[in-house]
Amino acid sequence: MAEFEKINSPLKKFVKGYEQNNPNILKDIITNLEEGNPFHYLFTGVVGCGKTYLTRMIMRATLVTPRSERWEMIKVIKFYKRYLSYITSEYSDKWSSVDSHNRTINTKLLAIDDLGDEKPSTSAAHDYFSGLIEMRYDYIYTHPESRTIISTNLNGNQIIKMYGSRAFDRLQEYFVICKFKPVSFREKRHRTLVA
Image 1 (tube, rainbow, N blue to C red):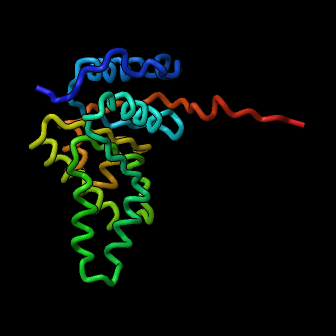
Image 2: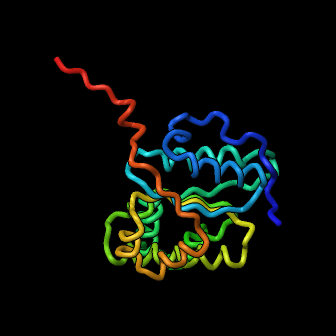
Image 3: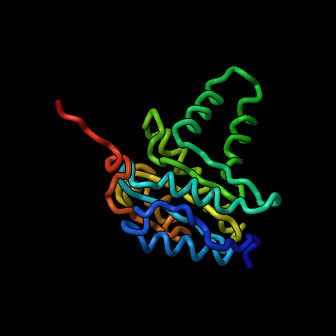
């Protein structure tokens, strides 16, 4: 059974937009949090639909006691830039730095934000993240009590095109794919004044 604490009334400060636009996603997440279950979510949707905000709310809601483990959050663009700086460095221990960097994937609570936003977006970058998806897949297999959230603006076909069908197949095995409705919260808050 899971080693997570049950959370009473998680996400109670949640914005109404999620209840209106993505009620099934919210219901599944709240059930898992209330019951203390492990979970793996792949959030897909347009820019501004609240994937990262929801991820942060889940991360906050699950830090209920001092003994709770901390989430590791990877911003894809920064994570890949750090990797590139390691492999291009002149230091003799650069490969141990790369290994240490990649071990971030093997943590009990992991959030990967903006998969598909690696820059430069090259086949080498796509191969790197495909390998990291494979590493996470292996970790989940041996640590079923873990939790993972991956957010992306890509849909399934785009993930296959960038990272290959093998990576997407592995995501489909363990992850609940949550397709957010194409509603931008930022667009709703934006006001345009015309002179």
